[in-house]
Image (cartoon, rainbow, N blue to C red; front, side, top):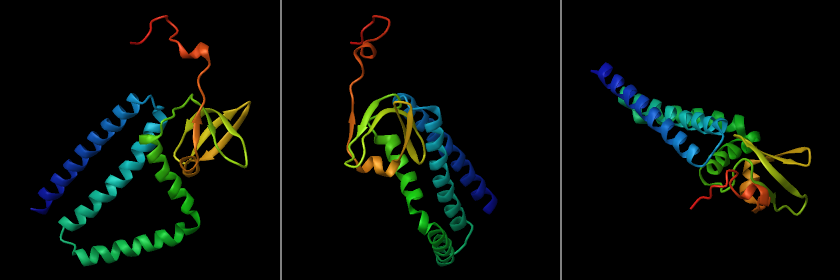
Length: 172
């Protein structure tokens, strides 16, 4: 009986992965997001979904809830202590997910990050799992994802030559 339950759970896991991957790819293509960025998000959400299904599997196999919570709290305590000095890594990964779904700027946009200490302006070259790469006059600025969500970002208009479609066909 347990074999059937495990097989059904595994099948549900594979179906959920497939649906999630397709939804992320469709969303990314609709927003013209880089394929590398779509893969970052897909891998990150796959880790979360895998963790959820492992927990459900343990519960379905008869491991008591109290045993599972003691085990998970011990694991999370060890991970928390290990990552305490690196909290910004988790913050940047979370910010990366937010940027993927809700950030109004894309690769190729001219932006200026409002920062009182430095002028951070240029063209967005890449949005990765931990940072945004902004090219400014030959320099490549690496700006952390969690900071770009905390600062105001101004999108500079495109040059007039880039604003109109190249073929002469205008969108209606």
